[in-house]
Every structure is written in C-alpha cells, then in structure tokens.
Image (cartoon, rainbow, N blue to C red; front, side, top):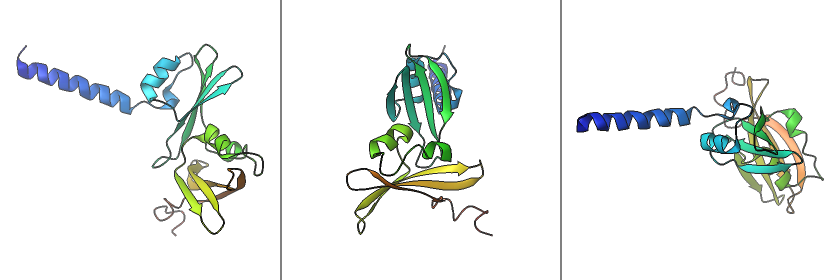
Length: 169
C-alpha cells in the first residue's frame, strides 16, 4: 500500500468516526447499553443524579438546541429508558418557594440563557423548547438571591420569535 493510499485510508477512517460521533443522540441509546457505552457515544452528561434504583444522566442541548434528554440507568449501570423532558409536565415539577437552583439543574442541566435583573435582585434561567412540536417557546425560572425559585413563566422563544412565521404574520 502506498503512502498516499495509507493516508487516504486514515483520513477516511477519521471521517467515518467523526460522522458516527456527530450522529450520537440520547434517543439512540438502547435499553441495556452500559454507562461506559453511553458516555463514549454522548460524552459527559451535564448532571448525574442518583436515584433510589440507579442514575439519571441529564444531557442539555440548550443554547442552539431546544432539547434536554434524560438517560436513566438501573443500579447495574444499564440503560432503562431515555426521555426528552422539555415540556410543561416536567417544568411544573419545580415549585416556587420550595425548589432551588440545584433542583432545576438536576432536572434540566445547562440553560440556554442566564440573566440577572438588577432592580429586582433576581436571576433567571431560560430553557428553550418546542410546544406541541411546533411552537418555539421558553420556560423561565426566576430565582431569589438565596437560590429559591420565585417564579416560573412561559414566553415565546425570544431567540426564535423574529424567525418564526407563526408569530410574524
């Protein structure tokens, strides 16, 4: 095999590996996969939450994406299920006056945006999501200075509202 052929083979192998890595997604993690296999495919999760009978790993695609996925493992480190969790049913698990930033982080990981409202002395995290698979929305958690959730609110996604034909008729 010539040097050029070896170089081409190495290059093609590298491209194939990159393509497979780019295709990795929590939805593709099959039941029974090991923690090692999932971390090899998806990387380190934003959060690893201990559960009574295993673990929940949280993968946030916030920023440019509108998804947060849970990959749930049993106590033997095998995938039990995966679930996309940015919806009102999951958002409503966080209760103002009861839950803290750490609780929000444990459910959803990295937010799309963090803000601070100086006049109110409060911070807020925004999670972008698709409502009913069509509408670009945002869920906002507003926090008191001690980290307690003060308010939960919903708006159209400010990052998408200018580009969304539904809102610009």
